Image (cartoon, rainbow over all chains, first blue to last red; front, side, top):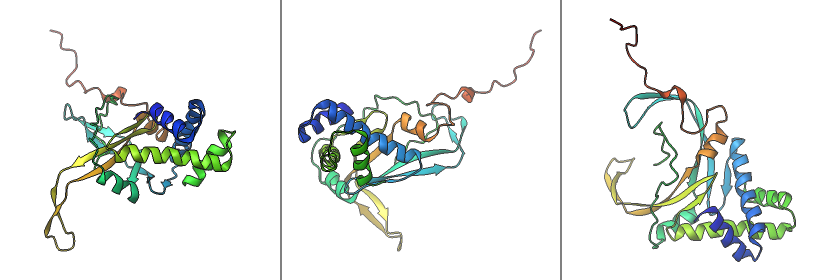
Length: 115
Length: 115
């Protein structure tokens, strides 16, 4: 689902126009972005929480060449899934959509925020 | 930041919705996202990030107290990958996404090698 599909779904669900739904969805993610920018966490009960983690500078590697690359200090948002959503996802039976990674983001510092 | 604050932000910034309507639409946003993720589908919010469901195979873990191996059952987990835009917002000092001008390999032994 893309953001515009989410907007369509919210419009249908709340019986409002798409442009009104778009304003709300944009406002939701804008305010979340601003909170993270301030270094503030976000807690959405039943969904999950976001925290900002501060990383010290370290030497990473270019995964293609194996060369050492200095990685400056940085802040990254970190998402922890909430209990309810965690259970919903784990109990789900629908076919999992693969992460097609079509939005290439040239991560050279190997900081793929995975577990 | 809590969901109540997101609702306030929608109420104040979008306009034309009562507090109650703002609350209902914000709920619709997160409820829709939960249903989509429970169905194994991913959600891509441009400028914010992607929520992706992943299937994990069963693997062996350890009881950290006793050190004895215990199987961790196969499960579905939700991961969040922040977008480059969001990462950039949290790290304004860092030059934009992926392209580090200084990342060229140092050319060794470059000197006047003219015969």
